[in-house]
Length: 383
Image: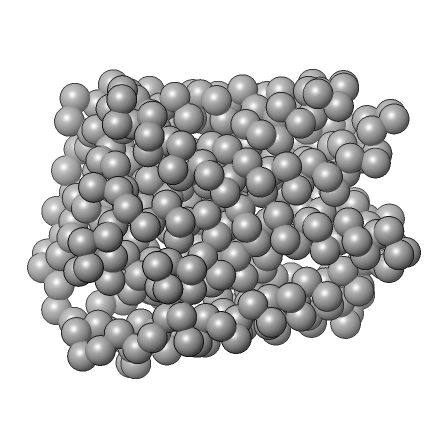
């Protein structure tokens, strides 16, 4: 349990805050700096490009040091780059900091997940993976609550970055104690067996790419979308809190569904629910519709991403770090393309409708890839 809590805090820092706090802060950066949608998309994609590069670096079979060293160092970089975002108003600096932060987030995901899931497997407590992956939703929720408090006292976007970075730094301290050294078996100098890509694994990787592309447009711009709805501007930060709260139990929920209908069907159903949420986000005109889209977003993509990673690791246990890196690479490629694509399409049509509908269609294809695969049933991460 100690390790699961430490991992939860780590994902809250490295993903929930470092990667996703840009979403609720973005409307205030647009107002304060005059950013247009193309610039906002570039800043978002810089982070996702860093995530992509981080995944590429993590694929290397031999790296100096231990998993824990890379993991903790990456967490420190996540906190530092978040704080530094509030100390500049240069687009170039933003792009650099978000890129570096993206690399660090990928390292947290890959090295941390390899370290912690390996420990769970050794201890026969793989069911704790649901608690570990809940960290993303916890980080989103905590940072949303912090930003709502900062808005209430009249702070600007700079202070939002600085305070959320300080929150990350404070949460990092117990991680050093809760995630102890991994011992002699997990130093990153290894000779793993040759990787074999079955058709089900290829389908999973492709669906993971589509998941990354499909969710990220809404995840990046949902606060901006709500800000543009007459009478609902007050929900622009609340909606991101709802995304985070919905994400906390999502891994456990979709695992429970999978035990009843098969995990490949569970993954496909979650993808369809996410497709509805993505499409619905650009048509929402009431508070209820906005909240429904937020629940469908947070309650699906976090569960799907966790189940996909755990299943990929179970398909190639001898190449755990490498397959986690490849999955992260596929996911990162999709989400790197998404914001730039959305910003470009916005420039043509003046809204996010077309981009979101294309993303929704991609999620439908991801559902088909998993549902129609004869041997691609996703195993429950708790097994």
